[in-house]
Image 1 (cartoon, rainbow, N blue to C red):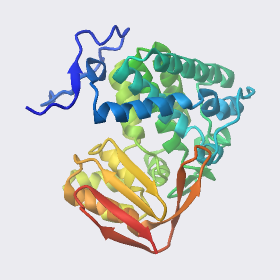
Image 2: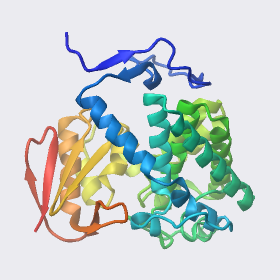
Image 3: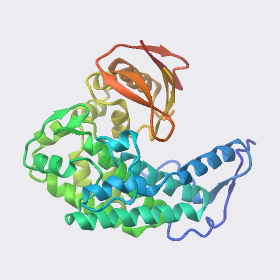
Image 4: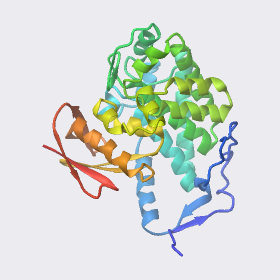
Length: 359
C-alpha cells in the first residue's frame, strides 16, 4: 500500500458552510469524485514540507497591495502600494484573483484561520469597490471602464493579446471570477457569490447588444476560461442567464473543430491563440505550471491533456514566443514573452514537459 503522507479527517476541522450544495448537477454522473480538500490533511513528509513553504509564502504577501488598483479604478484611495510586475501593467488584478484562489485553497487544505480571514477581507474590499463603481463592475484593469464602454458600443479592436488597447481584459476578469468562486465554494463566503453575480450581471449587460460575429471577434483576444467560470456560476446559482453568458464565450474557431474530432491545437496556437487559453477552454487541464530559470522555461502540463494534444499545444507556444527574463518585485524571475521571433524547442521527456531555450 502506498502511503502519501495524508490522513482523512472526520469533520473537516470544523469548517463553516464549506460543503455547499450546487443548484445544478451533471447530467452524466462523474465516474470519480475527488476528496474535498478540507477532508484531507497532509502528515509530516516531503508533501507537507512543500505545503509549509507555500503557506509561508502566501502569508508573506499583502492583500492591500493586490487590492490597490481595484480601489484606484473604483475612485477609492489605495491602502498600500500596488505590487510591481504585471500588477503594475495592463493585467493588473489577475494576480489578485489568483491570490484569492490560493488563500481559499490553502484554508481548505490546512484549516488555518489566517487564510479564512484573508479571504473574507479580500472579498469585503472587492464588494466595497463594486459599491463605489455603482453598476456591478469591479476590476483593477487600467482604463477598464473605457475599454468595455467602447466594446458595448460595438467598437471592437482586437489582437491576440489586446482588446481596444487593453491587455487581455477578459483573461483578467476570468481570474477574478475564479477567485470569487473559490472563496464561495471553499470558504463559504456568500458575499463572494453576490459580488460574482453582480459582476456577471454587468458583463451580461455590457455584451447584450453584440451579435455572435462581434463576440467571436472579441474571443480573438486571449480570454482565459470565461466560459468555465460562467458555467460554474450557473451551477452555483441555478440562474440560466449565466449558462447563456458562458455560451457567448464559446470560441468557435477552436472548440467547433475539436467537437468534430479535429486536432487543431497546433494551428490555434501558431495562429495567435495562447495555449493556456486553449487548455482552459477545453478544460482538459486545470493547470499550466511555469517554472522559471534564467534562459529557460520549463513547462509542465497536466497529464489529463492527451499526449498528442499536449505536445502540439506546447509546441505552439514554442513557435510563437521568445522569452526574456527580468526580476520582479517579489524577488522572482519574471519571464516576458515576445511574439514573432524564433525559439528553439528541445523536447525532453515530452510526456511531462518541454524545455524552451531562446535562441
